[in-house]
Length: 170
Image 1 (cartoon, rainbow, N blue to C red):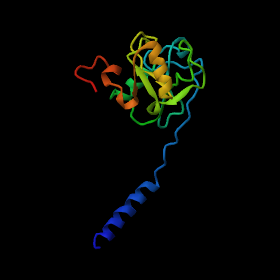
Image 2 (spheres, rainbow, N blue to C red):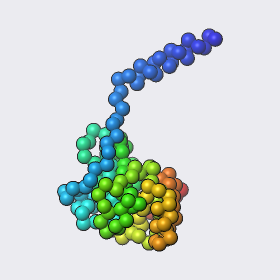
Image 3 (cartoon, rainbow, N blue to C red):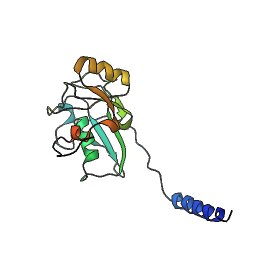
């Protein structure tokens, strides 16, 4: 019983420490405007085929745009980029079957998506793409037509996203 006061004191301090902190509000996905440009290459998103990505960084009103899902995931992995990320969205190809110009409003939270990797579909820059879907069934239908395999966010091999990194893998 003598440890109970100590445990209560620690719990009270933990609760007080969290009182002044504001939880980061998770913004909803945005639609790319004609002025949206890809973070890495500077190209207009409107000119790029395939699924896209957007990342919200804390204390920035507008998302960072990416011309491919692969670039979106690379941003998350590379140490030189901000890690105070509030939300990550990728095009939901289950809702946007038009590869050339995915439909507006077709977004899925990146960590919730099912991804097809190793398919015949490539990014606008002709590199391997991680094609996102909100449902496993849609991802499997895509593999039947385009090849590849279905994985979850945490199962995507690091060297699939960053192939130039020697000695990495999952």
